[in-house]
Structures are given as structure tokens and as C-alpha cells.
Length: 371
Ligand SMILES: *Cc1c(COP(=O)(O)O)cnc(C)c1O
Image (tube, rainbow, N blue to C red; front, side, top):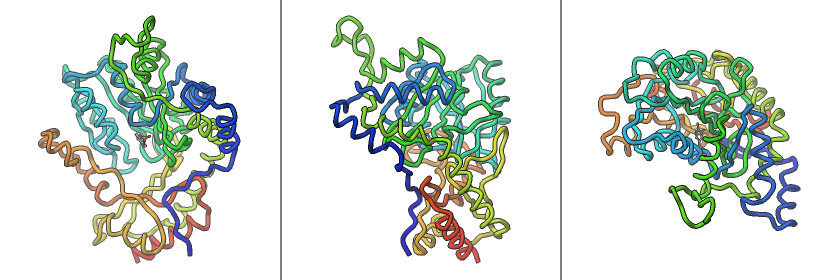
């Protein structure tokens, strides 16, 4: 039986045709027309006035923080349980990440623990929707408004997901997404920054493009980066966006198969089907081994691999990252839930091209391991 990869994207639409169009017309750089089309298309989908395409979802966060002028000891409250990109962007701009633990059911940040962490230096909240369920935005936005805090929203894993019918990616002063191949829309590598503020949007565009001078191109008033997206990448993204609704439907179908196949398996916590303001879109289908199970995620994944099933571990909490420990960050911080699910959580094959039969085989392999 063939190996089931943890993610296989579905590229069966217009991807090839639009790529050929780039080659045929010679438009392969960021100057080509697909970039603007992708920006307009995704912004419309997310209900945002402006979208700025960049070369990945990690640098989208760097741009967001720089555009908001964060740095120099500013404190940013963010989840302990997330991808390194979030904390890396905060640390790199000179700001200080302040960590909040995650909810044991949704795995998203504990909104009720945020307010206690606010100090006079707190400038922003970084919100990250994880694994297919949105963060409980209403109380968070209220806290942000009351304390005059900026909101940065990382919607990389929730393109097309909503919170009480409002799109994820529509809540931040600046919001970001990724178009990595395991995301709901892929460009191979890519990302986007969104805002409704014209000034912020202009700053994001400048930062993405080396802050070239207005009058004299090569005289720079500020330092930017080359974080541009190519027309080739955007061409794939435009084709992907045409099928977003079908992709989301498929993700939910895969999630339903796993829920059914793994229901009642002892020692296994499944992704929550419902969270605040949304049903799970199952960006990936996560599971967490119970503390009574005599092995952790690493060993479970090794066994799954031997049974021909790919999987990935959950994120490793920020306060336990060797790089941040060496930098002396997060001394004394504990986040028990993030620590537990970091060690005991992993996700099963969840790509848009996964078949029901593959999902069933993956679930059967996991049942076998736990039996
Ligand atoms: C994938 C992801 C990113 C990073 O995106 P890249 O395009 O891989 O750089 C950032 N945040 C979250 C929550 C992600 O899942």
C-alpha cells in the first residue's frame, strides 16, 4: 500500500493554465498582473480594503509589526502555542513577546488570561487562529479597544473560516495569511498582509519593496525588505482561490471522517468539532494523546510512519524553544496546556487531495497503535 503523505495539495484546476500564461506572456516577476488579481481576490474574500502579497506568511508578520511601528521594548501579548514565526517577528523587531497559555479544548489562546498580562508597555495583541477553529475574538477586541492596543491577526490556517459569520483575517488592524502548500490557498510559497487603513497599506507596500524612494527610486528614506511575490506564485494562487469553497468543504468532509472513525478511542482527544463562533474547518485534523497513554506524540508518529501514514507534531511552545531560552526570554514562564499538547499532540493527513479511503486507513492505523 502506498504511503499517505501528511499533506498533498489539490492543483487540479486552472493552476497549469495560468502558469503557462505567465511563461507565454513573459510576465514572471512581481510586476505581472496575477499579483494584483490575487490581492484583490483574497482581500474581497476576507472583507478587507487592502491586501499586500508577500513571499511567505512569516515575513507577512514581520511587515505587519514594522508597519505598526512596534519595537524597542513594546510588549505584545500572544499565544505560547503557535508557530515560531509569530514570536520571531516580535523578537526581531525589538518588541517583547508575552505569552498566554492555550485552551485545552480548542487549543487556541486563553482569552480570559489576556487582561491580567497587560502592563503600561503593552502595545498589541497577536491573535493566531489554530488548526481550524477561530480565537474567541469578541472579548479580545473589547480588551484591545479598552486598553488602546493594536491587534495583529495571523489567519494563516483559517483562510475562508469565519467567526460568527465574519471572515477570519478581517479582525486585525493588520491581518496576515500564508499560502504555503498545506494552507487553504497555496502559491507554493507566499503570504499576504491585510488592512483597511490606507496609510498602513501604503507602508506595507513600501516595506515589501525595499522602501524605494518616491521621487528618486534609489534614494531611501527607510529600510525595507524584498518580500515581493512573483507573478508565477500569484498565478497558482488565483487558480486556488477559484476553488476555495470546494477546498473548505473537502476539509470539513475529511474532518467528519476522522471524527467518525476515531470516536470513542480511549486515550485520544480529537479536534473539537465546534468552537466559539464557528464549526471547525479542520485545516488539519489534530489529536492529543491522553496523559495515561504510555508514549508521546513522537513515538506515535514513528509507529504511524511504519504503518505508511504521515503525520506532524503539534507546535512546540515558545517558552520552551532552545533559541529563546538561550536569549534569556520567558524565564519562569509556565503554560501547562501548551506544554502538554506540545508533547502529546500531532496531526493526521489532512490535505485537500486526501481521499476518504486514505483518511480511513490513517484512522485505522492510529486505532491500531492505541489498542
Ligand atoms: C504556516 C503559518 C505561518 C507561516 O507561513 P509561511 O508561509 O510558512 O512562512 C504563520 N503562522 C501560522 C499560524 C501558520 O500556520
